Length: 361
Length: 255
Image (cartoon, rainbow over all chains, first blue to last red; front, side, top):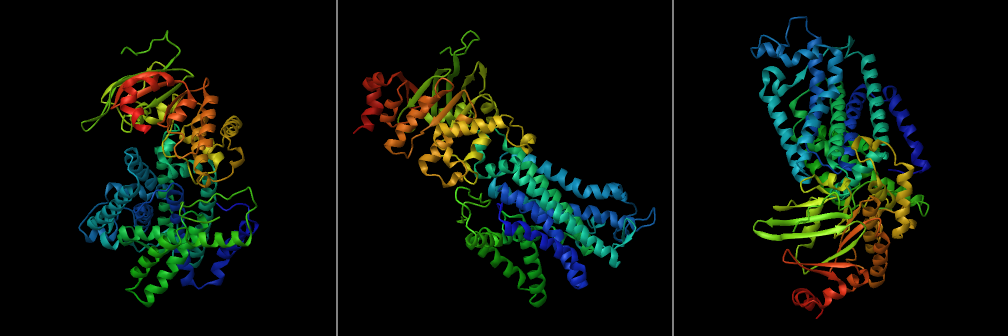
């Protein structure tokens, strides 16, 4: 993490102020994009804990993003109905009654809690089963990728209860508020900014605690940690669970901003994109992850409207360049530049958070 | 060998009893037994492939024996999970320095010195006692001035000492040091021998090495392993003169 560099310590105030006043500055379209991308950056922050700190690469974060999004979307569908009715797409698929697992989400309290609880519980069970068997590295990444594939396939195949390929859309109100109203849009945007800030501060606290130190220790030498008498498994499970909960929160907020959740947002390709946001921003840096998410997604918006077919190629190229040339991402470049401007006082080295490949300091 | 310890024998710390480790037909250890008393030094030598590292692996639970048992303080620890074996008081230094390179030297020791190793307690900072212990050990291994450096930036010899320090900081009753002088020059090797001597009494130390000059500096009792089996045990002088040992080992390493 950044040490006591006065310049960086206070620059966040500027960004937070800018974010807060954005509704008055930018166009409604840009605000809608910014809201979505900030929601995505909550997921990216979780990846810093999991990938940057604990060194666990996951290619299945879309699953937990999707769980959060779908859970909330189910509530939004249900809340628009008159009691006894079922969502329109179910009727079209020939269903006549609500599936049992939809029913709890009629209650807004249950649905809002489930946004975090459902991804958290699923992630904890999955991670415990896998990490206990000491599946690590690329094998773990492949399993999570398979998970993302299964999840997206399942959603598409269960048309009559999940909305299939089209997902869930056409939301009208949340807790009685009209989602399309300008006041709701702005409030939702500020809520998103608040959640980004809270996630940021919470994770920063966690990463500076001995828990964060144990995660970095596990990344550096899982066996060394184990043979010092610590069991690395619960640390890894906790990191995976926390990052999944943040992904769920991001998914729910994104669904509110975008007005839709669908399998196209949760499968293999989106899950890889999530990793790329963090790689571009710098996986060892919380603010880097937010910056990377905004950067890549605004670029995606520009490029895919100008050249619709080019985006995936650009993304792939960016990923290759980042991994080979700037492993610490945008954050690494900026932190190196700053430390050159203001040399770190001798005797007090800054702990680099990223991989040994980062040749800084 | 009836190494199964009784409560009466309180000096006995470790008993390896007839351990066989079979890697798909290759017996890395073959009915090997040994005992070690509290606070004592033992040096384990033998040619490459004799089974020295496998013995360490077996004691700390990284490798499970096909036959035989390991007893520690009278308790059968053969099938315990690794971290629980460590929690009972055995800690090992690996051959290649296993340090935590992106943490500071002090943090490396704080992780080792942590007395409450339950994960949900990891939110709380290290206790003053743990800090004091970590600094004590840093003094002992001569790295106190390097405390705020990243462990990955240490010189090779310093990394070896840091890992010895981590093993010591766990306050384990038994320290297993697997080639602690690998890659060190003569001066560093000397210091390492002194360091190990300073640990005896408080800890029992089992050292694996095949540098005979280092073994002589260490003194203490030597156990010779050959093809996974016990070959000889005795003082350094006795071992040097033993015709069997010379035939399988010393003769070859000193040409």
